Image (cartoon, rainbow, N blue to C red; front, side, top):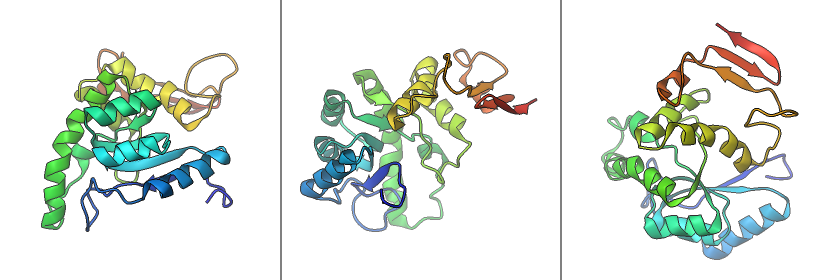
Length: 223
């Protein structure tokens, strides 16, 4: 994948809500395979993200040196502590718990959703309080590109402070993917700016009403 131009490696270390077979928390790779993936990617200067739900699978992914856990709906205190100790990021994609309609899914998938979605609404706050580094992501196409604000609002709804969530979507996200020319407003960085009709630290929902967009110093939206 790196030879074909990949800029990030993502592996599915555990199952998911929409996996037709197996538990959502079951580990899909051996520890040796995980370490080989991480070591080879890191040797090439690439970060590795891991689709992982189950607490045990998270622990094994973190131990292998995975840079970021995607989802982590079923993480427990021990897995959280290990993430803090290793500096592992979490991209919680918590909006999925509200947005995914499983009413027409097979019964086994509905059962998974009923188990996992309530935990998705609480695990991210536990991780934040413990000091896990958090960045905003959407799990597109489940939550489409351009709907980042829905995840931002959902994170505040889970109990995270608005300013911390804004940082997760900007400064933290840039740090996670390894870019240092964006993510904050500073001299010499790309002029990537949005404007919303209000103070998002007082009402986070204003982030869903973007009135002005500047990217790289060029204005694309000005309502």
